[in-house]
Length: 175
Image (cartoon, rainbow, N blue to C red):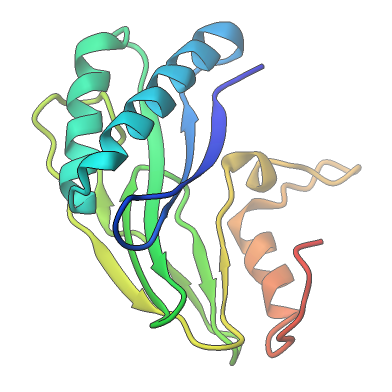
């Protein structure tokens, strides 16, 4: 039980949403706040708001209802599989990595601060075009904070090195 979460959310019009995030803290207090955020997100998704406005509304509600010591990181994206267009807002989450077919890596940073830090925070969206063979890798800090048996941290560089091993591998599995 904890605060890491992901969700796939259909929308009444247009592409659905994918959400990945992490609530500061551990155990049941983090899990309760995570459940609140997902309930808010599932309610607001039907309003078809632009992503920055949707994240702004989530931030306002988290700011009002979460304890002052708690915040939530969130990556929220909308993907159109027909056009390959990915719109996203990164609110303090570990930046997803876009590994291009040629092996280059892009970090998806556009957005703003974590939810609940400041009531009046505003957010901007980013946009990328995905092409055949590109891979979007969304992750939480659990993978980058992992260590080898001899205590070496995996960190972001380890994740990028691992992704580089599969550059050009169109059907490479997540494993």
